[in-house]
Length: 205
Image (cartoon, rainbow, N blue to C red):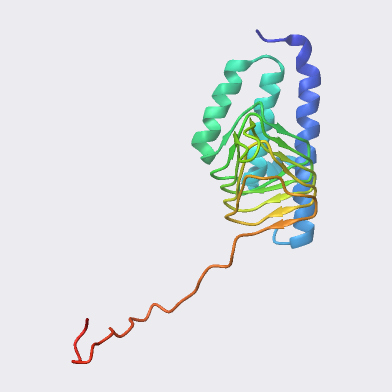
């Protein structure tokens, strides 16, 4: 049942968190350029898909916190259709998280994401079984970490502060702070057709 007494604090938390998300976005823009800095929250919500997705997640959290469970579920389904992303309303994303593009993401209900974390498109923070302990759970992403494009982080593990998981990695064990996780460089070879091997009679085989 909807809790009227919870609406005001939940609404205040919604606004504070979304403005913190925008500040991280604008700090990123100042560092890397490419977009105007200093836009209003409304303008950035229109222009930035990642901030839109965070706004949708914050709305789900607001609805959940005031015990409006059915609307929260409806919002979750709308996010799936609009952005191709599956983010559970019970996932914990601290104020000040930046999402880049935001398409194709999957975040478990048990996942926890700290402030100043950057999540790129098509990343997964999913439940899984730890390969050593057998414990089941979802990841904790600590403050300032970066999860790259298409990275998959599974199980009850921790990605330490300021660590960076590069694109395409699959991570199933904890990573200490200030680390870089990367996959081997791809093999590059010529597409030219190789001459067939020939036997002593000049014929192949």
